[in-house]
Length: 339
Image (cartoon, rainbow, N blue to C red):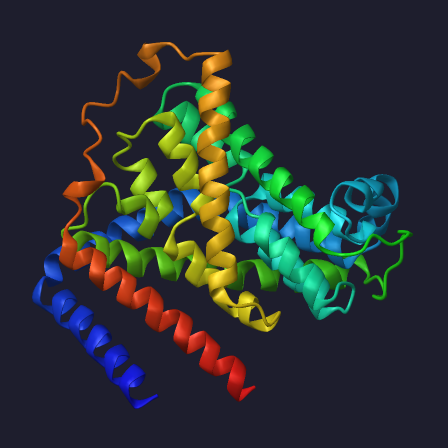
């Protein structure tokens, strides 16, 4: 325990010294992160989160679950009440699925095992970010955006379907343990929850952007660390690699979900493993789609930098990242033991 705490202290002090030493670069990176969040995350995610939370807190959730919940029962072996969580999680953006999963778990409508299964596959960048921001704006092709989005969604659905066999199938019928709230109460609570979530996301983006600006991070690692900045600011990756990065989500997104992962008593390495599996699956699906329906080369005309080989990754930085992930995992495990 003392060794772990000492390593955490050394790591955090080293990052602090770097940020202080290169304060101008850190400030510029933080400003870029804030601008990125302000122009992309906040306006696109906030209204959607408010609406999704309202649906989950009112009788609208029951209507949607009763009408289409059978899909989750047959496809994912999950209660019908999980349909809005999965649907909104796949179309809304990275934190949405986890946030709504935590809402169901906190209300007692799903158990730990079901929450774990949801967190393993209900993870997607959302149609707004992938199709519009990345596909249309960055790659100059809505078709490329659709390919990326469908690859990520298909990857999630396939994993969710395969995980459905990990538990014995039971006859599913719709039920809800929560009493529906009035629209006014739901609006107030949903707005509060959405704003807190978006502020949390913004803070992480600012922190990771500041670190990103001050450290010589290889281009191949940029999206692994912070997906939004790494993908949108200098996308020189193939479409299949971009799809894999999107499915992994980036450590910045992972950190945002740690409180939820801890709340459902799930181990981070479990979540991390399925992000890697999803990335590999998304890569293969994208390659298959491109084989059937190739994109015109003009789609990537705005890309001028070729992708370097992974062997060019700075060894010291790689070791630092591995050590940081190990410390993070050990820290989560120790918290679970204490609880």
